[in-house]
Length: 256
Image (cartoon, rainbow, N blue to C red; front, side):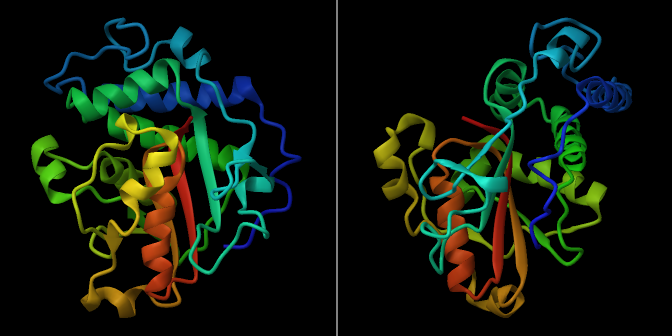
């Protein structure tokens, strides 16, 4: 999982990227036409497509990436050496600004059960990761950020897993949802102030004892829908590192 030297100098071709995204959206849109939820654009509610051309053009890519610890800009999203500890995230990348059509799409996925959107959103992540030139080692294991079983029961699914499965499949990476557990029910982060979020999730994740040997000296990529303060991702990394993980990166569809 060594950093790619060309990431910052990489200039994105927006027209080419949007064309590729449109192709992906149309492909997945056709495959879910029979889905119980009517095919609509989450950005403007237009019928017949998951994302219309106008809303695709409004997707805002994040041009810089924060340090997972201090939140200040970090080269390639790699945690600052002065912030890095034995148990922190090694790198954090978020693809889109958490606003507009992406924010609405995530809300539809999480709170309106429009799970057909997950494959589309995952493929948008794949498209942008490839455009950025980000590569993960072939033995990197993807872990969707786990929900507590009570919340998973209420929602009926884990949105992070719905994103992680097709994302991992597209990149040929293994996805595991059994290596990390949420050990206690926590208040939703969105309801908390910035300084309360770290405390809320501190110690909320753990690697099961029976899985520790499968974590030791391995590289992991955490996948989630949104990163705001990074507290949840850092708590996950802490648990994995304490179980012997070598590198832990994180990738989210959107960042605030």
